[in-house]
Length: 294
Image (cartoon, rainbow, N blue to C red; front, side, top):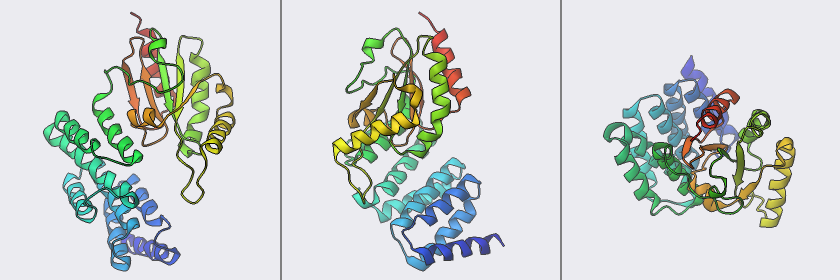
């Protein structure tokens, strides 16, 4: 019955068009439910119907990530190997599945040979990555392995972290139009109102993305959109400065938004989280940093 349901959904996917993103959404749903087998079945049916195309390769990337998250390392390696065969070098059209293969391979390396080997692998890949999104993705994985406990990377533009030394600083990385950033807005505004009188400083950062592929935007138009999004989505945080810098977001590995970094009074990163955070988890981390006085 389960396979019949998956096959029916795939058939409907194909009827609506192979590039609509439905296969990836289905695979992500199955992974989130811990049902890797149904995701694999859907992708196999898709390939039989359409062959190998960008939608299929994106789905394989998600299967590789899901298998690694579910500790099915043998399955993850199989999908990584397939991605390497199909995408031997970085291309603009396939940068997402190409990056997925790299990400999973590095994480598998960390589990078998240790953090140092994984960091060396990611650093080597970063040295010849071209796309900003790929550079950010690789740096995110390096940061997950090594950034906490290290001095916070510098920011380009706006207030400097050096000028705030002696105070804890919360960094919030976001993008205009980001659904998860909107989802974070209510709790983050409460956190800011709670802690801004308790020595916490805050800096937000984003970058120019150029607008959607089908509707490119000029830098001035995008800056206006950024300002509007912030004003409408975070209305009680008008006093928080925003840095607009691609270099900063790459340095902090912002391939997903929101991303958080919490810096202590000595300028050391105490928390790095490339994901949404609950109000309780964020408050707990801030309380620890505020309480840690020299």
